[in-house]
Image (cartoon, rainbow, N blue to C red):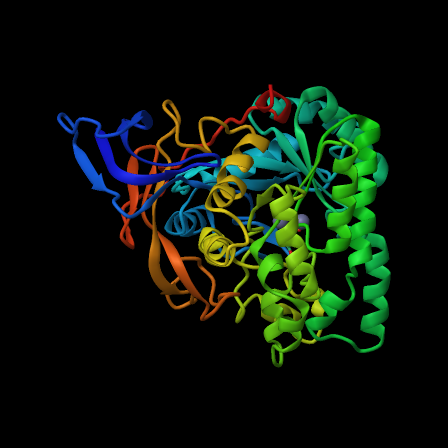
Length: 470
Ligand code: URP
Ligand code: ZN
Ligand code: ZN
């Protein structure tokens, strides 16, 4: 099957030019002006459109047991929603259960994705227990090497959620030392979980149980301190580190300081931190604030422009979603009367490109090239997918979005494709949307119509971080 995309404005992280793109099977075969249309099966007229590499969301939690329930999108509904918003690859987080084997966590996630994923997916591994329940306190270090060989080339560790996912500094240091050797990348949830736990217990004892107290009991200093500690441990181990869902200026400053010294410290933020604030949460009546209960929490509004500045200055390299949806009516409800029981997470997999186009590109906070870079190219480079994904180049997978920069639409739970009963951005007006989405050469979204199918998405064996930068 040959497809010719004609006359689009091709936008990559570095280029912006008008040309045709010829797709042969699943990959890009040629890029040039006026490519011949004979022997082509399908022509897509992209006049007036941007032609961009498909988005890569390297931080999603599909079908994840968490907070006494399971995230509402599975691999089918979540990847389908991603595609509608122009995202053509995800990297989801598999979990090693406490006392369980790392390999078992990986196999559990393959099962969840099998027959369901609509777009290509990679997996990170959340490591919770280096002993894997055995008498060998470091058994999982070898298991980390073995999953890296299977293409799971990044891990997530938690400095928060004591008793659930949190690991201590010794474990973090050992894991970082292992990735210094095997070339993988550690993603860190950086908040001081032990201190937060004390503050939370005090709040509950004082009868402060409403959703807003979730945010008020997780100070920015708890994030800044953990980011600093995580980077220091990485520096000692001689390994790179990637801070996930960075939310505050205090944390950002720690990354900037390390990067200024040449430390391999990287960080992502998410649309919710760029666009929503603690002040917005305070205005939400009754139990509505549960809709924006996630960790780290929303911050005071002034932090937002600092994060945008961080994106411009490359202190932040990536915007992911941390998509972890829980329905308001049935799941967030678990924490009515006790904010500690509200499942932590929010929906966003569908709206990342749209929100950043409207509030980044249209509002002139970032260039259109930087938009592509932070949503596709750098995630691909950072997580070992480049150049197969993350750019428009001959030989790359034909994961391509025909983006209409002028399409006006309104975000709403009534029309979105995520399997969740609310939107964090209900009623927000956006100019710019994915019109046609191709995954490995196949049109999967065509003018708002679903053309893909469950199970067509493939597991991507990723290169190591070290390999990706060779
Ligand atoms: O609240 C959040 N962020 N939920 C998802 C799990 C995590 O920490 O990333
Ligand atoms: Zn996290
Ligand atoms: Zn997350």
